[in-house]
View 1 (cartoon, rainbow, N blue to C red):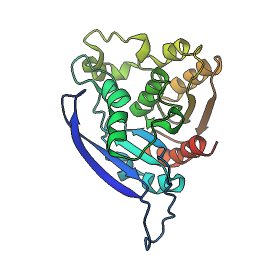
View 2 (view 1 turned 90 degrees about the vertical axis):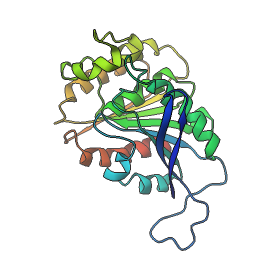
View 3 (view 1 turned 90 degrees about the horizontal axis):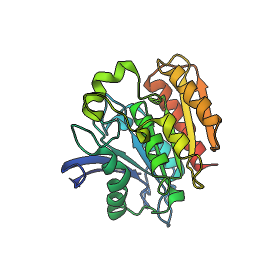
View 4 (view 1 turned 60 degrees about the vertical axis):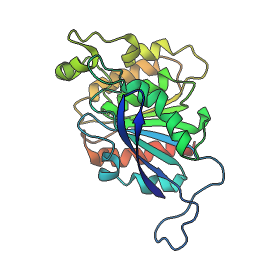
Length: 252
């Protein structure tokens, strides 16, 4: 696998930004401890989103995502979403437009990745889990599946109110398309809905919110997988469950 630190100008953000990309390397003779699963065709791509307190470096720092991706021969793209909740912010940058629309075009410009919907996936943890589910549902013509780990399932949580002011404005008026409960309803009738995966720890402070979203999705017509296990809102849980999410995505 190769690790690329890609710095470039984003028109959506109006500034320079940075993404980490891990991608199979076709020739790796002599590399110890890694199976080479590079392919001749264009690579499937996973966009992997971080949580509220982190940035694009965190998945590489806290997990073995590069090693896990090598097992499947996929490209993993890790962008920085700031504290935006992956939204076009009221008082800030257009992070939804950047990650959901602009970034896939930029990645295809620089890397040998597939442009096909069935080869494009998105996942994330906490704020990034919310972002992954939201983006896949709203951009269902571009993403075939999404995984949310310990997701911010209910954007209306009282403990997020101050954090949400720059995102949605002083009155925190949240559009239906940014509310996962409303969004799964809105997208239920479309033919090409993305497959959805959720995992949450039973000791997570957002466990009950995830249970409520689970019940909502199960009442609708989705290809949906839900996993709960003992665990808190922590990297030990996410490092374990991203492996299950990858297996669900790429070996189904």
